[in-house]
Amino acid sequence: MNEELKNILLKVRELYMKYGIKSITMDDVSRELGISKKTLYQYVTDKDDLVGKYIDNEIILRQEEIFKCFKIGFNAIEELFEISIFMNKLMRNQNTATEYDLKKYYPMHYQKTIKARREGIFNYILENLTKGINEGLYRKEMNKEVIAKLYLWRSENIHIDELFTIEEFTSVKLFVELLTYHVRGIATEKGISVLEKKIIELETAYNI
Image (cartoon, rainbow, N blue to C red; front, top):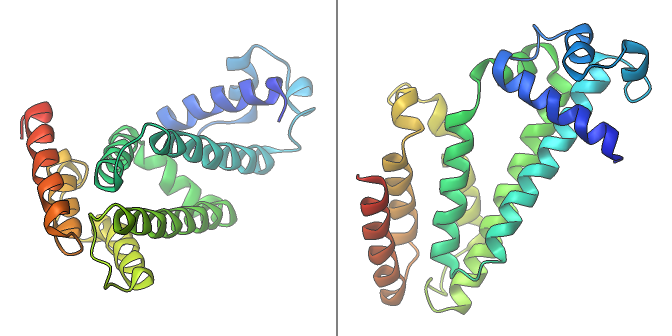
């Protein structure tokens, strides 16, 4: 992807995050970028193509952010919390209109995000479970594929459950409880000790 297209997609990202997708026209994009529509159409064929490229770029950006957590040197439990806090921030900053517009008006692109999200979460949890077992933090006697699917199912369905408000769903407190629930079910005694220390750190940092 060339730099000009990257800059276009970054501006489009700002507009979509602020106003949603449906209300933003190609005229709006070209005006915000300070370029003509003719120049804009050198990079995309139409709005559908622009939305598709925006989605592809979002998937790449999220993968890059998550990958950074692997390079810091955390153990499996610390890594799990770090990535979950990052995802929590994404959800708190997300404009719900953007996902609504994507789902209603660009279903093919929406399905692409769902597929990428599911594959990403499932594969990451598998890697995290393997890492935790090797570090002696997670129990060896578990079905990693089943645990990864359960984690994925819970993460996908909790936000459509009317038991939780938007404020509760996007709160750090809820994420800490969910991760505690997950880790305690798979952790060794050593892992539980690491978990309890991490919980204290987060409670202090976020005043929960």
